[in-house]
Image (spheres, rainbow, N blue to C red):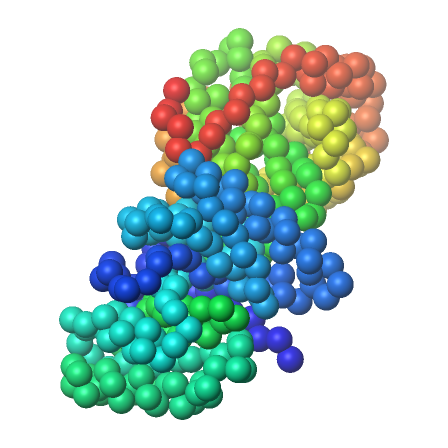
Length: 418
């Protein structure tokens, strides 16, 4: 039976308990990566692991070019000659790569007992409180069993520093992993994102507003292996560019989870004016959202996307009733993915805070939707009435025109704001 490592629900890049700057050890610093559900993929596992290794290399390339070695459900990230500070930055960056559950800042030492003893004692130097040793022998040729190694190293540490052993809930955990050619020694680790490697589930297009919901929806779909592009509708020429700046900042922050993100911006103000003049009245908001979806579908097909993603949550606002969601689904042939559909606002805000998009989403801007908000919105939109409005507008042609007017931006994580 395969056991999954599961990371706690901690903020990306936040150190777990028992993690601190590790003192120099007579070995080579590296990063040991533990995978999540990727290890359950059976015959497809090789493909998932190759994609994940590529994603790791791409994510850390601005820091260092590294080697990623795959062994028995564990990745070893190395850069010969790299110093501890560089590998620390590499480990921190990898925590944003989907598919990684834990990133351990480890020391690679010789495959002999003396090297392991020396590394273990140096890592535990200066620590106080209880500890436990957890050993894993991937190479059964090593002369000591895991239990024997635990006891031997634990006895040495206690004799040298006087620290008591506590096997249940220790304050510090010293981990030793015996591999084919070397041994890895580490204490603590950084929680990752879990999920699947981005790119393994296809490509989708996120309808990105400047609000709290759509960035969280994008994150949740990337975590399921979907590579996403982003489509933002601005109210220009009747609003300023603030919502575009905000969408750009959000995509730049989300880019840390996949790299190579693309943001497409459509000036939507004149199309909204046409909807308002069509006599849509209480149906104006739903008619507008159907047009956005139609435009998104045209663009998604051009980008070889297979789905649209929105931040809808059932019942959160009047336009997100079940009847209205059904009316929106009718507008396009592509599936519409709604990863937040069963979440409430508190849950969504908590996740937005964790992925560091909440403060950006809360910045003021003039959203395009405010230009068309009727006094009372329809909560039970009828598909037949919406189709009549769209017939007057010739929405097929209008969606093609809007998709042709997009401006493309490439907000990259780590780039300064523009």
